[in-house]
Picture 1 (tube, helix red, strand yellow):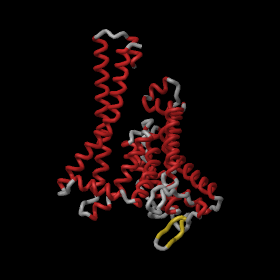
Picture 2: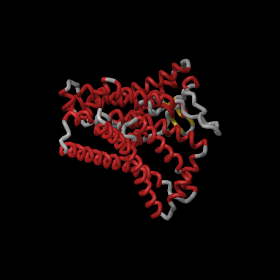
Picture 3: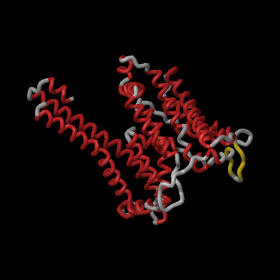
Picture 4: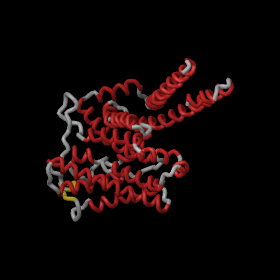
Length: 378
């Protein structure tokens, strides 16, 4: 191998590394600038405001809350990302996890089994319900050509109505003071927490381990299995996938069901780690947050983890702003700006990379570089 070819190859590797780092850095800088302008327009100083958020998050209790929120967000974003990798927009994660949590909570409250078995049954019910609810949209798309965006949005509304119908004393709920919810899950169904942060007795959800395992499984599935290759190939080009013998309809069906199955676990950290019952105040909207975080993380498990931590940090640190006379809605603006910044930054980097590649090929053609070297460099 010639030294000139080695130099070119190393140069391309270095350029790729710089560009990969440039996108998130550019996004953070852009989001910081926009947020700072908005703060200045409201008569607040940007640096002291950001300092308040960082100081508040140094509290051990707040750190536990941030990790717990990030655990839930991470699972939600993974469920969305599975569909995104195949150009499927599962907007129905919100309805899937709420219905799954409701039925899983009812089953868990009705059963008394040894600890690990009780937890396993509850999680299995949640996975099955989430997958089955998502399969409705999958069948509509594969059998009738109905857009999954429309069907999953409508199924969110149906899940809300069905959940309200089930969450009544005549069916799955019991009255508890002014609240109504499923029968509480016994101690054997409580997922043990982890004393991960020093300085507080609060514990991090034990489901953080399950979330990490899901992230590893997601990476292995997509990058080390035939199913993952077929999924990515179908997402890249359905025409090419069909030409290579991939059953596109079957892949759509399997991918939507898998996305819904993972979505079924979104409510489990809260259910088995804090509330132990599904009631009217059970967290909602986590599915839509997962969409934003999946976009931030570019459907990469590590990127999604960073996005989930950042989102949870902003969500759980904004109360300190109110105490200092700063509207905490600035955090919502910041979150939206970050998502848009990430999308814009990656698009700019993608275009720059494509233009750089075109210039490189043009230079090689103009200097008469042999086709063999061109192919080896690629």
